[in-house]
Length: 241
Length: 209
Image (cartoon, rainbow over all chains, first blue to last red; front, side):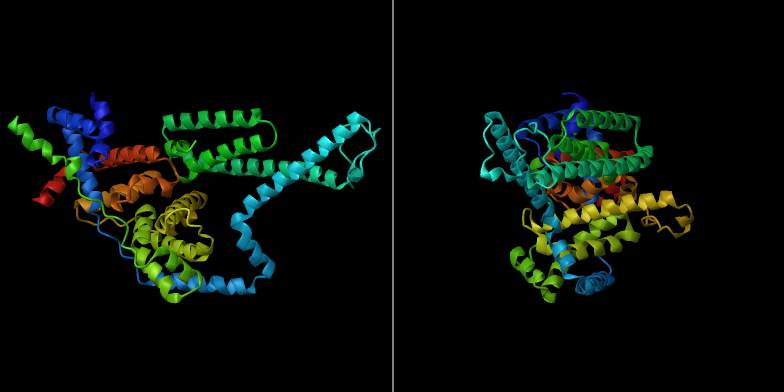
C-alpha cells in the first residue's frame, strides 16, 4: 500500500476505528516506512495534546448574565401583544403548516381545473357545484374571474410562488456577496470548486420547471452557499449535497 | 527487527487506544430535567446550566477565542432555555445544545469577520486575539495553532479531539455525514501539524519524560 493511502488511514488507525485487516496493514507499513512512522508519531502526539487540553472554566458572571437576559426576555414577552406571542410560538413549525397549506390549495386548484375540463369537454350544463365555473362559451383554461373563490386560490398560488422565488433569489444574492468576501482566504482549488458548483446549481435552477422543483434547486444553491460562508470550508459545504 | 519492534509501539494500537471521555454523567433524566425547565423551575434550570456550562463555554472559547466566549456561551444558554419548549427530542439534549453552541460560535465568527471588514475604525476596539501563554508548552502551542485554523476545522477538532465526541455525534452536531466528518478531521489534523511544524512530538516526549 502506498504512503499516500497509509496517510489517509492514519487518523482512523490512531483513533482505533480501522478494521483489524486495515490496522494490520498500517502497522506493517509503519514498521518499514520511517516517514510514515514519523507522521503517525506526530499525529499521535497532536491527538494526545488535544485530548489533554485543560478544561476551560466559565467565569462566575456567566450564569448571572444568562439569568439577566432571560429575565429581560420575559419582561419583553409580557409587554408583547398576545398575537405576536402566538406567532412566535408557532414560528418554528410554521413552514411545515405553510407547506401543507400550499399543497392543500394546489390540490383544490387541480380538482377544480379537472372538473372544469370535464364539464367543457362533455358540453353539459354546469353542475350546481360549479357555481364558480366559467360558462360553456368561455375557453377552457381561461383564468376564472377574480371574484371566484377558485380563482383567488390560483392567483394566490401564483403570487405565492413568485414571492417565494424572489425570497430565494434575495437570500442567494446576499450569501453570494458574503462568499465573495470570504473567498479571499480560499485556495485556487477551493475557488474553482466553488465557482463550478455555483454554476452547476444555477444551471439546475434555470432548467427546473417553475414551482417546487425550482424552489428545491434554489434551496440547494442556498444550502451550498450557507455552508461555504458559515462553515468557512468549501469541502464541508459540499458534503451534504 | 528488534529495533523496529521497539519503535512501532510508540503509535498506540487500536486495541490499546484509551477510552474516550464521554458525555458528562447525567445529573438527572433528560426528560424530567427538560419538563422542569419548561415549567420555569429555577433549580432545574440551574442544574441544566451546571451540567453543560464547561463544555458549552469550552467549545465557544476554543472556536471564537477567549474574549468573545462568554458572550457566545450566554447567547447559547439563553437560546437553550427559550427554545426548550420547542425541543422535540429528535436528537439527544446534549447534541442539540452542542449544535446550538457550534452554530452560535460560527455565526459569531462570521459576523465578527464582516464587522472587521466593514469598519477599520473599529480596529482599536477589537477584542484581543486568543491569549497565548508565554511558555512554549505543547498545550499553549496547540491552543495557538487552533486559533489559526479555519473555523470549520476548529469546530471538528474541538468536538472530536478536545471534547472526545464520536464521529456520529460530531456529524449530528455539524449536520453532515459521518464520512465527511472523518475526512474533515483528517484534514484538520494535517493542517494542525503543518502549523505546529515538524517537532510536534518533541515537547510531548520531554513532558512525558
